[in-house]
Amino acid sequence: MIDGKKTMLSGMQSTGMITLGNYLGALKNWVNLADEEDIKCFYGIMDLHSITVRQDPTELKKNARRLMLLYIAAGLDPEKNCLFFQSHVPAHPQLAWILNCFTYMGEMNRMTQFKDKSAKHADNINTGLFTYPVLMAADILLYQADLVPVGKDQMQHLEITRDIATRFNGIYGDVFTIPDAYIGKSGARVMSLQDPEKKMSKSDENPNASIFLLDDKDTIMRKFKRAVTDSEGMIAYRDEQPGVRNLIDIYNAVTGHTVEETLKEFEGQGYGTLKEAVGEAVATELAPLQARYAELEKDKEFVNRVMKENAEQASYYANKTLRKVMKKVGFIEMPR
Ligand code: AQP
Image (cartoon, rainbow, N blue to C red; front, side, top):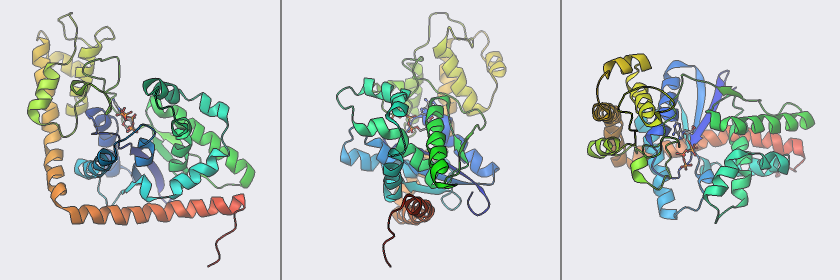
């Protein structure tokens, strides 16, 4: 709780240009949530998490700043929401270190994301990748978050956060709020356009697999045209046709239609018609965001002010929690 309001924290890694998956699965819901609920929301650009995978410094900078602009361009109002860079708030790694000392190897060993990511980056299995969930726990607990919006893939991280917080509170008293999962309106899980069994990802090596938020209309249409479907030749919503199902999910997430409505709309039509309609709908959805992004790109002063003020706000709340933690653990306060 902050100022009597429930508190929520979420964020994205600045590992690349964000995709339609990140948008429909997270960002778009965050924007709706800000309009609907009386919740104090913190949205981080999780640049510290990004370096668990090797990043080019110039690209990392570019991606992080671009992500801030995309948060705002998508409709997150920086006056109402706290939009901050994780690396601007040193309390995140400070608390993560302390929490590392309250987390067991066995717990980290069970994290499926570590197994997945280390398989993907076999040449760089660093300890940051291993303890990544502890930094995530620090992200959440620093803001005394009551709620964390989570997809199924993130549930394990929330559970470990709850375990660490409960353990810490058990020793030192009620220091941390124990966060709950926030299950919002169903966010679409968007799959790769080239391999619909795999989720769409920023870091996919095949650029045709993902729609990026700043892709122009021609690119969007071309990528949907090339989307992998099947040889059934029938528009249906079923497990056996994951490519078509993914196109329907995307279409519905953008238009607000139901599966039944969409199946009716495309009854007897070919995949080409569906792909074109999805492409059109996505391009139309992204056009205002892209226009706002172009404006923001020119307004450096505004963006810099948002960065500074929001980092200060995030630091204020984060430091409050960190001070409490440090006192409880027994560190000497610096004399004033
Ligand atoms: N394909 C997706 N469909 C729906 N939601 C998705 N999210 C990610 N991919 C999809 C949601 O986006 C938010 C931000 O995710 P993240 O940046 O923390 O990392 P991620 O989940 O690992 O996303 P990516 O795009 O796959 O990044 P890389 O390629 O760097 O690993 C989260 O809320 C996530 O659920």
